[in-house]
Every structure is written in C-alpha cells, then in structure tokens.
View (tube, rainbow, N blue to C red):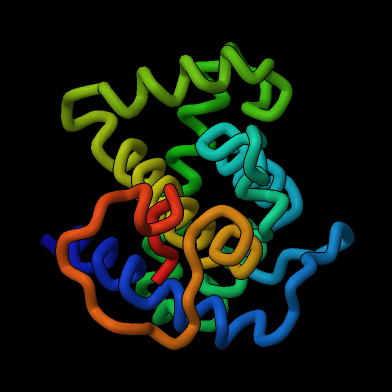
Length: 183
C-alpha cells in the first residue's frame, strides 16, 4: 500500500517536481555530477533508464535527463527515511543485477541481455526477490513519469496546449492531432 502511494504521488507530482528542480533549463548537462548517487550507482541508473526507454524515433530517457531528475528528486524531495529505504532497495537491486550478470556489472552487458534480465526480474515471483523487484519497478515508474513530464517530450512528441481550450469529450485521436496529450 505504501509503495502504491509513493508511485501515485510520484506520477502526480512529477510535472511539478521537474519544473521545480530544473526550472527553465531544457538541456541537460552531459557532465552532470550526481548528488544522491555514487558515480557507479549513477551509471547503473543510467543504463537501467536507457533499457527501460531507449532511443527510438523519440529520445531516450537519458537524453531528456530523467536520470538527473531522479537524482535531484531523491536528494531534495524524499524524506531522510525514504532516502535510506531507497538506498537499501537499490543496493539489493544492484547486487542482484551483478549476480544475474555472472559477476559483471549491469552496464557491461549488451542491450539485449540487459532487457532479458529486467524482463525476468519483472516477471519473477517469490519473497526472496520482493525488495529487488520493488526497487526496479520504482525506478521504472519514475523513469516513465519523468520522461513524459519532460519539456522536450511534451512539446515534440505529445500534443501540447499550455492553456487548455474548449473541452471536447468525445473526439477521435486523428482530431486530436494523432498524438496523446501531454497535459
């Protein structure tokens, strides 16, 4: 129940939080230095996010800075108790990924192996992987929320209307411009 509340809260607050955390900044710094994560952990987060939302005809999660927003959210928004809980579950996830990769780091695996490993984790059942699976699903949910609330995705890949017009309840996707709405 608690994780559901966190997930719902993150999804609802993502647009506000990303505006608060990045302000008018639309380009993300390639030389960003993580503040919450250690460098090695941040590399794993980047690879996880890049596997969850890779570059296609739209930018990857990394290209819109979802990893940087996560780092800033954890440091500036999460309560100290929740930060500690996240660190603990992320450490379990990182350990699991290393063990599942045969002692290699997750980011050293190829994209296909990373994807297979994450799909297996997502479909895993049992108490022994509960914390690991929860940590992965938390990162996945936040990746998607921060990605969809990014300015670039909102303006270039979703319909964007900063000031809503007249409400039209039943229109086709074609009438809406062929895209889902950003807000």
